[in-house]
Image 1 (spheres, rainbow, N blue to C red):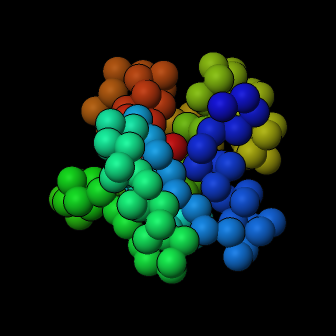
Image 2: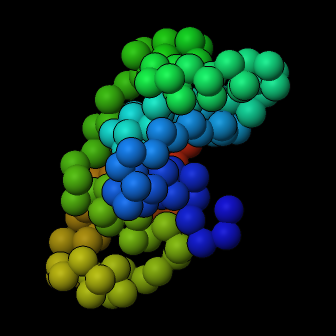
Length: 145
């Protein structure tokens, strides 16, 4: 989606049109994405591989006020490891996601460069990554970013 990903669009719609009932159809059914979708007020969450008849059924259920979460995604979300990163470590990883240098990340977060390095180093260690770029990928894959 140009400009926004589906979750960001859902968050904006939920904020701007609170009566809107949202269903996300996704190829990225990661547990963290499911949690973020539910927090945004999404009422339905299913994979793109769902048959058309199932999608139509879910849309009708959500329109009638029910919720629907793909059962496998729900099981995966319940079994998923909780994010070990602190909110500031997540902020630093988000800011590093586009490859920005530490100096730019520090300015954008209002932190010193040393503090940013510490947050990034902690995130890399906690995620068992080789570097901050691998940590960003790992956090995204787990649905934490």
